[in-house]
Amino acid sequence: MNDKVINFIIEHHMIKEGDRVLVALSGGPDSVCLLHILYSLRDELNISIGAAHINHLLRGEDSFEDEKYVKKVCNELNIPCYVRRVQIEAVAKEKGISSEMAGREARYEFFDEIVKNEGFTKVAIAHNANDQAETVLMRMMRGTGLDGLVGIRPVRDEIFIRPILCLTREEIENYCEYNKLEPRIDRTNLESIYSRNKVRLEMIPFIKRNFNRDIIESLNRLASLASIDSDYIDKSALDIYSDFCIEKSGMIVIKKDAFLVHESLLTRVIRKAIFYVAKATYNYEMKHIYDIIVLQRGSTGKSINIPNNVVVENSYGDIIITIKQNNNHDNKEYVLVKRELSVKNIETFRLEGLLYDVQIEVKQNSKKIDLNSSDLIKYFDYDKIKERIIIRSRKNGDKIKPLGMNGTKKIKDIFIDKKIPNNLRDHIPLVCFDSDIAWIVGVNISDIFKVTNNTKNILQISFKERK
Image: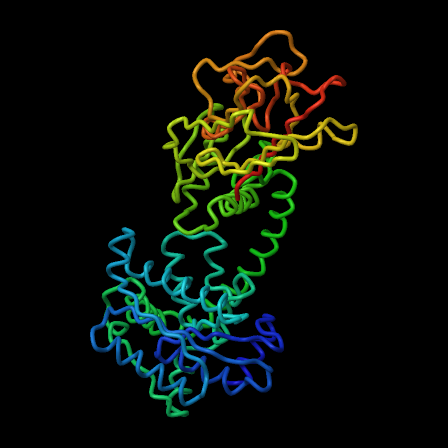
């Protein structure tokens, strides 16, 4: 058993010398087996071990007995044990999600906190070969694609590892019995009250009896083969993503040419783009991916909402994905009075609701200043400003005299010409000097306040996109 696990660890590059491995320890057979095996291999692998236990408070006294058992095991092995109690049902109700999802979120939040605070480098989770088979089978019944057939990956995000994914449940139970580990048993796992339990207790035994006695091994082999193909397609999709996607401050633009590539690559490009914006791919289904493809084929200006507060807009064939912005900033204005500024005086403040932080500085004109160094840093003739510097969002009827033009142009028309997404237009700051708009940040500046050879004092305004 130890040889099988260590070979699996080496094959998937799970652990390196010096790693501090945090074991997710529920107290059940799988996690106790995992802890025991890693502990017995700690010298060979040159690693240190700790354990983390979440008490979900779902099973009455049994939950506290599980916690007590986990502490006892860790104490006997002389390893650190981190325990947290969470009212999972209350959390699930508050968030409007299932208890299973609430439990998962609570566990991973706990793991992340321990990794950050205690210096662990890996988190070991006790999924086994039966879990893999059940996952693949359930996804097949839902009509999954190739990625779904991959099932549970041995390594995720270079931190979360599954060293006993190569072991069957029978091997784990035999290991626990042989080593007299006496793990805790969750009786709800023996009841056909959840879909996964029905697959485990009814469907897989039926398949074994009537079709394939090695169904666990067969489904794990399917997952392994699917993983090889999926990894290759993912790599190809990454090249396309790099060529056709533009990441910018919490939003992403997928250029229309990306939608000409093969669908198997395009769906992965879109999924990666969603992940960049939403920082997660949970709650997203293939339906949402294909909704975006259909949107791209439609009219410009159309948009759809997908889970996690994400907005997707068609902008002249390009697809722009952003987080829906909070519109409750009430057209707030940020006003600075000119007389309060002086040369070498720097003002810095945050613009709530406008996507940016800003810094304002007055300096003397110099040939060393690069007036076109950045779209988010601009320079103006300070002496042409009469009284006030105002930063605000757009209003109906706003106009600007663009640099190099004699007449004025509506801000709305400039946004349309520049293909600025509708979802972002109210959150782009306008810099005004008294009653004139001097700068549409990141878009255009006014001819009125431009720096010339006769300019003595310069107002430098720098915006920084908020991550």
